[in-house]
Every structure is written in structure tokens, then in C-alpha cells.
Length: 290
Ligand SMILES: [Zn+2]
Image 1: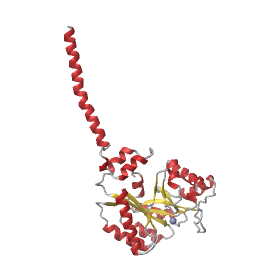
Image 2 (image 1 turned 135 degrees about the horizontal axis):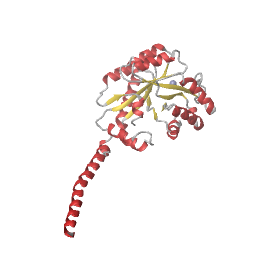
Image 3 (image 1 turned 180 degrees about the horizontal axis):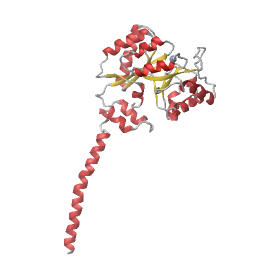
Image 4 (image 1 turned 30 degrees about the vertical axis):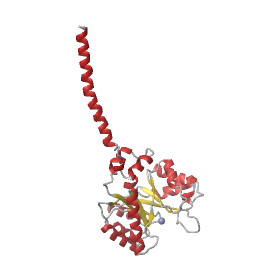
């Protein structure tokens, strides 16, 4: 009787092992499909996402998206929009996706933003901030000495009138973006409005992205300006530099301005772009996946 019982017991153990081990194996295989063990197949962008997510971006959702065989991403921002309806209209007619950044002093701002959104572009707020030196950043600019309440007041005055925008970047601001207290107040407001921060990097000492990270605001910095020299050859040269940056690190952000020549060169460059290698996307698309 005892021997019979032992045999039945052994059979149960063997049966359990037979079905448990493959199940365990399947579980491990599933995990390795989601998290590749061979990181050489993953572009630098996904490695960076793993290291820098700070809990803001779900890591597993970004990992499978950035394989080496995917096109790298370029985001082009056009700053200083709003003062000319004609220039806004021109850039909204661009055949690829652009990120259009509007100044608060723009006339018929709501209509211009609606035009941009209807055409499928991304819209962000171009916030004037105090520069080093005597350049005038414009009416309602945020100043480094402003109190937190003042910064919130000026931002609300601008941002409450807008809708459909996803982020903000600085117009001028070399002094403001280097000031910890001022940038902290700005980031608190961006966080409350669920906006991302694009640092235009008008000065190397900007601490914008550092503070954004501390407050939990998604952030990115521009890599280059594409038309600081408003000449055909120089703009094209800068776009080629932008391509090289993107191919190296997986993405790149360039900032341009609403010049007719910028539009012309950008259009020609875009028509020649090898979309199997490089994709023009919104800043949101880069920032949520980088
Ligand atoms: Zn600007």
C-alpha cells in the first residue's frame, strides 16, 4: 500500500515538472522578446531612453520602437511665428510635419494656430524671456528677477488664450534660462499644463533641461539653428549637419525662422530626403520616445 502511494506521489511530481519547465521556458522567451538581450540591435536612442526615462516614459513601450532598421527622426521647429500672417500661411503649406512656435504678441493668434493645426503641424508656445545684454525680448517677456507669481501671471496671460499646443520653448532668454529660481517657477507651470520644454539653447549656461528633469517635465534641447546665416548654401549645409547628428544619435532637432529662403531650402531638402533612413516628425514624437 505504502509502495503504491509512493509511486502515485512520484508520478504527480514528474507530471508537475514536465508541464512546469516548458511554461517557465516560455515565460523567459517572452521576456527576452520584449527586452532584447542583444543591445547591439538597438539604436543609441533606445539605450538612452532606458537610462534617462526617470519614470516619465514607459521603458517597454519605447524599446521595440527604436531598432536600427527604423528611420532616424528629425524635428524642425520654426520659431518667431505670428507677426506675419503670410509667413505663417507659407510654413503651414510645407508638405512635411513641422513644429511651429508662435509668439504671444501675434495678431489673430488663435486663427493662425488653427491654420497650423488644421494643416497637420505641431504648435508650441514661443515664450519671450530676458536675454543677457540690451536686446528687447518683447512685450510680456519673463524676466529673471520676476517673482514666481509674476511668472505664473505672464504665462497664464499667454497660454490661457491658446489651445492645441503641446510644449514651449524660449525666445531669446539667455539670462532667464540660466536662473535657477526663475526656471523652476516656469517649469512648475509647464508641468501643471502638461507641456514639454524645448530648450532653444540661446546660451550654453542654460539650465532649462536640468530643472525640467527635476520637476518632471519632458524636455529636449535643439541641436543646431539651421538659418542663423540666412544664405542658401549655409542653410543647406546646416540641414546636412542635422542629418549627420540624427544618423549618429537616432534623432536631431533643428530650429529655423520664418524666412522665405529657409522655406525654399527646407522644401528642396525635404523632397530629396531618403525617408527609408530619415523621417521628419514633430518634437512630441521625438521627445516621448527618446
Ligand atoms: Zn525667437
